[in-house]
Amino acid sequence: MSNTVLLMKSNEMEKVKAHYIKFKVERSAPGVIFAAKLADTAITMYKSGKVMFQGNGAERESSLWGTSSTKTTSTSVAKGDILPPNFSTLSVLGSDETGTGDYFGPITVAACFVSSEQVELVKELGVKDSKMLTDDVMRKMAPDLMATLTHSVLVLKNEKYNDIQSRGSSQGKIKALMHNQALKHVLTKMGAEKPAYILIDQFAERGIYYNHIKTEKEIIRENVLFSTKAEQIHVSVAAASIIARYAFLIEMDRLTEIAGTTIPKGASAKVDEIAAKIYVKHGEEFLKSITKWHFANTQKAIKLVNKRRF
Ligand code: MN
Picture 1 (cartoon, rainbow, N blue to C red):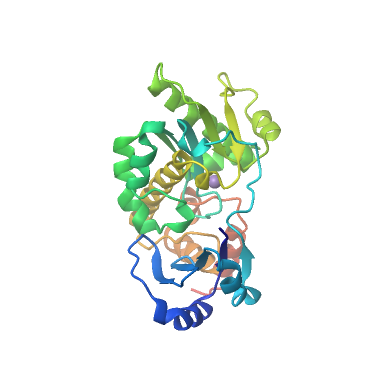
Picture 2 (tube, rainbow, N blue to C red):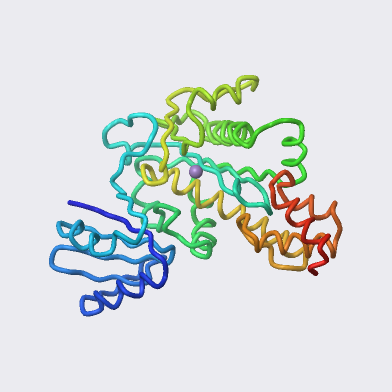
């Protein structure tokens, strides 16, 4: 069975909707904005802009739309370690991080254990590839996951991040230290129970990862596997990703509260403008205390302030 995902702009999505409207079906899954079913192809459209074609006719149908979009196949092989067969059904401790590309707010890392007996339950709770879920859905799901699963979540707030970063640590090193620490915490909580494997959503190759943490007292090495797209490979990583995102959003709420303005995600020109406004209203030290100060956004925001655009 073939499976193709296209990333589309909203005007393209409208065309696809119109084309398949006669075959529309109701799908209430999180993030789904439209679904249709042909005799040999299921079409699912997500809020994120992803449109999935599944079934024997997937190639044929997606090729109608594929030229103007970025085409990826979700069956493409993730990079990283070769995983044992039936990996998705095993007891796995997974870890993932978020916030690394956002100018405002923390880096958060979560590690989460899902035993083989819990895999189905976790799926029941709605856990899937977090890139298919919206922030609002993740906010609702995370508390249940946190109550159900043995986990650890670390929030590296901006002041500490800026301090560590300015003393020469790369983001890669910061992330590696946080993953190692979160994994260590969960293993401690698990006591005698051991995961079959540990799966880290790969942000650096194994050698680089371990080089980053080589001076740590306790280094988690046993049964550790690395893979990109790990949240699609085992629900423990997907759950970790949702918990990390939740912690990130909660901290963003706090920053919104103290800044008195909605703090945006990402690192776009809109972010520069908000940063400039905050700089004018609360000063440089305050802005620094809620951002990843070394990002290019800082200089762009200061330029905006100097141009008196506000
Ligand atoms: Mn990741």
